Image (cartoon, rainbow, N blue to C red; front, top):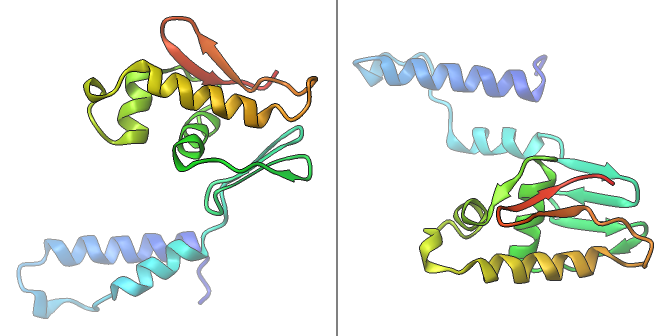
Length: 147
C-alpha cells in the first residue's frame, strides 16, 4: 500500500510479464487476479481538460461550457475526445472514421464526419461570441485549437 497507483500498476505489469516468460506456471511467485488490474485502472485520475469556459472529462463523458452541460451523442463525444486530447493535430476524415467508428473508412462518406462535426460545433457555440474550438483544414479534415 506504500506504492501509488502508477507504481502498483507497473509492478503488476512486471510480474505478469515475468509470469508469461516462465516455462512452468506452477513456479510463479504470485498470481495477480484480473480484478486487481481493473481496480488499479479505476483508481487512476480522470482525464480532465479545461480551456476557457470549456470543460471536458473523458471518463465521465462530460462536456460543459461555463456552467452549462452540453449533451452530445456518442459519436460527437468520441470525435471531440479524439480532437481535444490531441490539440493542433490535424485528423483526416478517413482517420477520424477509422478511430471513431472503428471501421474501414470506405463504408462511410466524408459527409458522416462533416455532419457530426457540424452538430458538435453548434452545441459548443452556446453564445455568438463563443470561440470555435474545432477548425476545418480544407480538403483534409479537422483539428482542435484554442482560439
